[in-house]
Amino acid sequence: PDPPSLTVLSPLGSVPFDPTNRVQVGWAFETTLDVEWAHAMAPDAKIVLLTSNVDESQGVQGLPEFLKLEQYALDNHLGHIISQSWGTAEDTLFNSAGRKLLSDFERFYERAASEHVTVLASTGDSGTANVDVNNNPYAFPTVLFPASSPLVTAVGGTSLYADAKGKYQSETVWNDAGGASGGGVSQYFREPFYQYQLTDAVQATLNHRRGVPDVAYNADPNTAILVYAGFFPNPADSGYFLVGGTSEGSPQWAGIIADANQLAGHHLGFLNPTLYLAGLIGEDHLFFHDITNGNNGLNGVAGYNATRGWDFTTGWGTPNLGNLAWGLADQR
Image 1 (cartoon, helix red, strand yellow):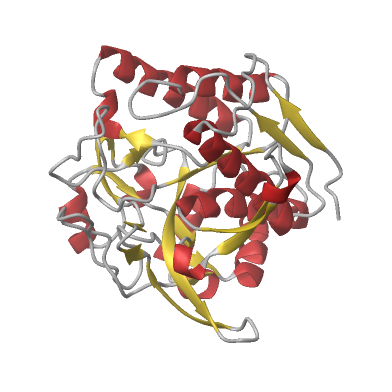
Image 2 (tube, helix red, strand yellow):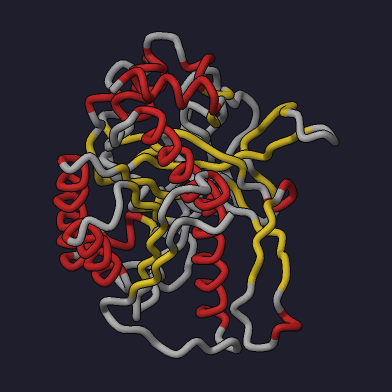
């Protein structure tokens, strides 16, 4: 069914859509994916899409505008779940403008948590191999912001396998020639309290820094989802497209949390303490599909191996949704 409401807002202004502009077409696919799959997971949820007049790329560009839009959402009480399918390598923000922006976003995320707003972000599609503002690859492992924020629930990516009837079979860490699940250790954020009780082996790698992701979702273009694109001027160009990437995970988790909010009868807000508590008391096998195979190294940059329990490729894993929704509802 149609959602109860779908509102598209551009409080900072907009630019005319140019179907020959690859950047604009890319963002059109991105926003279409986000809206359609948040709706697919939570058909009765109201959806607000905020569009910017400046596109986000590597570094500071676009992020001040994105922050203003998210502040606008809170100021106007537009919803209780924020999905962010975008990111830049933390290292691109290690200048004065970038560090100020990191601080501004953290203050915003603190406010969101205090207002019981859930904030999600995708970890990226390049594994540990991200690029600088000139699109030159870093020679060492990096992670993306905002997924690296301790106040955000970061969503990594898997390759999901099912039988011909759609029955779940297995998952591995998404990693193929085209991309891999983002994940690793923040170079900026300190280890949050909810990760203090992770295993000694994990702590040795964390070295008192924030580890990502927290959870995961299907992201492999070879186990793709369908997105209907209807934004082209020529109707003949419209139709269904196969889409992959961790951008799938953030909006689908947003839909999941909308369902869990409805089940609980209140807004769950900041998820990470509850998710980690479930894992640390041994209930992760009830709530998650634990991904234990695969590595997220890409393009010659060393990656991390999937292991039992929490790891740097898929976090706690992907949702065993029936159990997880009830578990979240019972915890709050």
